[in-house]
Structures are given as structure tokens and as C-alpha cells.
Length: 155
Image (tube, rainbow, N blue to C red; front, top):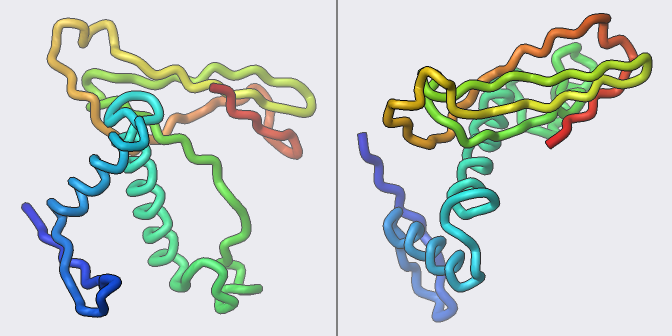
């Protein structure tokens, strides 16, 4: 399914123009190249766009779930309020048949330190595995309840 987005904008001259998806993409790519930003890889344009799209989608999901926008006083004191932040890590990996993620955990009385190792599964070494952004959850098992301990995510 292909969708086309048209954005109305008012140029400096005052008349309204339109920008298509193709023009927006070309603008982003040109700006990235002009700023010396890589298009792919760590810290590249694709990774940054993927992160922003996923964050926006997750924010939309929580808005739909609780029934009000972020910072809206409508949810205050209802027991269904946005009462904190979450740690998000966007990993560019691929389909579960090719890539895996495994947590490394170090626990103390005051803190839990977590590092997520991501990589190509040994059984997928001979397969063609595309690098795509996937949303996944990695279960981190602890030896003791989290209680009041802090959680540190290591890279």
C-alpha cells in the first residue's frame, strides 16, 4: 500500500504551495548530505528517522490508550495518568529468524545494570538477512525484585 502525503505550506512570497512525499524525502537526503551526515549506519539519517517514527507511533499508542494527549490535565488523579518516562532503545536489526537480542545483567543492592547484546544468530549466517527496524521486547530476568534499585542501561 502506498500513500501520498501533501503538505500545504506558505512560502515567503505568501502564496500556498504543496510538498509531496518524494520532495520531502529529497529535501531530507539533500540536507543530510550537505551537513555531512551519513545516510545509513550508526547515527545516520535512516537510524534517526526510524527512531523518530517509532517514538511518534508509541506516543500515539499511549494517547489512544489513556484517552488524552501528553500534558493534558484530563488524566490527573484518575489512576490512568501518564506518570513517568520509559527508557527506549531503538535497535536496527531485522527479522527474528535472523537477529536476536539477549540481555547481560549485573545486579547489586542499589542498582541493576543492563546491556542488550544484538546480533546475527549463528543459524542465520548463510541466510540473506535485511537490516530493518523492528519493535521488540527483551525480557530481563532479575535474581531479586527491582524494588527501589536504579536501572542503568549500558551501551
